Length: 141
Image (cartoon, rainbow, N blue to C red):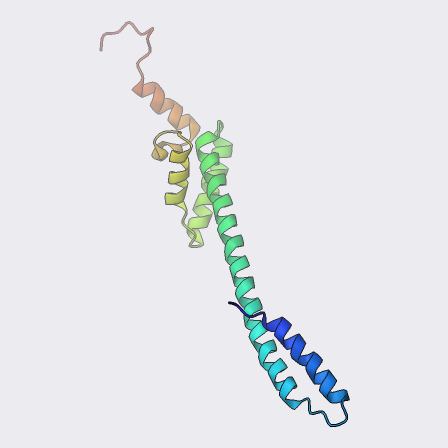
């Protein structure tokens, strides 16, 4: 069972206020308890904030991975492909290498060999034409 330290601190402050207003009341104990709970509540808030930040960072990381993967694999022009490649290279330069995750996302798209996605669309087209013999080509193999 978790304790909501903020609510506990507020309850102790209410008790301290009643004790303060009472003719023979002594709010010292209630104020001390309120201070302890307020201090603990600050830690709870920080933990919640850290979890929220962690979730946001993971979401942004996934968005970047998806953007790079789809930009590499699905771009039809060299310029769009170069933007995705440039983003991947920038992420590498700042210590956020996402190449493995990008490759996994490309495989998840059912696109084919992820290594080919890193080639520009023009280079991929030339490679494909070199690998595939034209059915109209009469020269013997």
